[in-house]
Length: 229
Image (cartoon, rainbow, N blue to C red; front, top):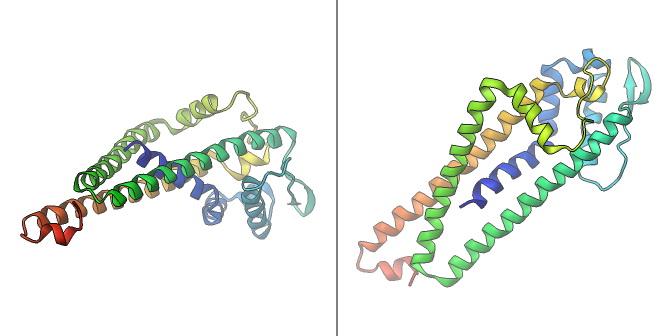
């Protein structure tokens, strides 16, 4: 039950970090090309290189692009060091998503292998509870985010990072110019919608299985029909 929200949330976060469309929509919405002096085509390449950095062991982050027509290193030393911390955090998210997925897959496999009505019923119920827990947690988080996303964002950074490298200057540091606070709010909404969609699908599947098994129990041939002992 606990692994359901763990998997849904971390998988949604992992998806967001790899969604170039999310990057591009943010660049356009917040006029990043005008703010940074980087052309739209170069911004797309920057997004691709950032995604590649998150998914490779290579260090440090080195991205060259044209700023107001002159090619230069995009990020300064402080930004590069912070991105190394961000990568560690992203890989932690990947690990939790993978481990929770493997655990859920193992639970499903074991329940089906036992061919036990009780085990399958419990699996379906816990799936529903897990989906409900996901929705409840996200609703609670959403209330905090709506009332003060900026303070929540700051608190997240203070908890997640052991240094102050994340405190960057939006007037001079390209990392903040590329990804302003509004971008992170939009990204959070994207993560929330994906996680809720996944939770609702799991709840629908679990409820459908319970309804089917209840219906099958009322038939004389229920044992043969369900294939569960």
